Each structure stands twice: as structure tokens, then as C-alpha cells.
Image (cartoon, rainbow, N blue to C red):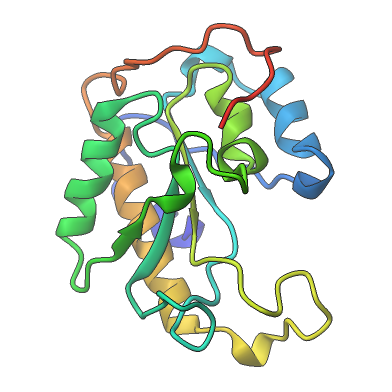
Length: 189
């Protein structure tokens, strides 16, 4: 995805790729980065987090399919950011079917609070976590590369690049509708 974007026309805004570690230990990497960013925090207009995009078909999930994609946080802070994501998806050759179940307020799995995108959201940066879902091999030694759907991974990457480019070329920041204000406050699903 970075190579695709580096070879394309330069957007209005700079793009920053950040790799976070220790999500399962309490968002340690993303929390550290957003507390100590390498660029001015107020220059970050949005965040797009991709995690677990290699699986997601019917063999992996009851609702799985080639177009299955879980979206967490899409409109939590910015309706406009969610609208942009929906519009870009509609332009894809094979649009994804968004599962918003795990983004519901109060959902017991607490994905909104457990994914790296939340470290950005706590600073009122429109952010999203995109996944093709947990599967039976999640965090198991049986989660092998032979089970990955590389075509789906490429489609997720192209979709993400399209969203990122669209946001980077806006003449404004995505409007924040629901500011959290206190980055130290406890996350509420």
C-alpha cells in the first residue's frame, strides 16, 4: 500500500505510515505514539488502522464472505469520515459489506476500546479499525500463511489507499462531531 501511494500523484497532505506494537498489552505502541507523535498531533487529520485482514471467508466466520469487512469507529467522532469511507467503498470494483456489529455502544467484546485506532480517537482524530474478523486460528499456532486470502488482503489495501488518498486531498479536515476531549479518560465502548 505504501508503494502504491508513493508511486501515485502526491496528495495535498502528507501521508504517515506508523506500525504499532503491543496492542494486546493495552494499546502500548499506539498509545505511546499518540502521546509522543513524530509530527504535530494537530496535523494528523485522520487514522486508518488495518488489522487481521488475511481471513474472513465463510470457512472462517459464520457471516464471512469475500466482501466481509468489520468496521469499528467509522462514525464515532466524525459523520463525514464515515460518509467518505462509505462513498469510497461504493466506488470499489467489488465493494465490501461492512459489519458494524462490533462497533455498537456497549458491545461486550469492547473492540472499540481494544484496537489501535482508539489511541488516535482519544485525541479527537477521526479513526477507524478495519478487520476481516476473528477466526478459529486467532492467536493460535495454527494461524498459518497458507490460510490467508491474499486477494482479499490486496483489496483491503487498495480500499484503504483510496480512503487515505481521498481524505488527504480534501480541502478541509473531516469535521469532528463528537469530541471526547480528555485523552486520559477511560474508554467506553
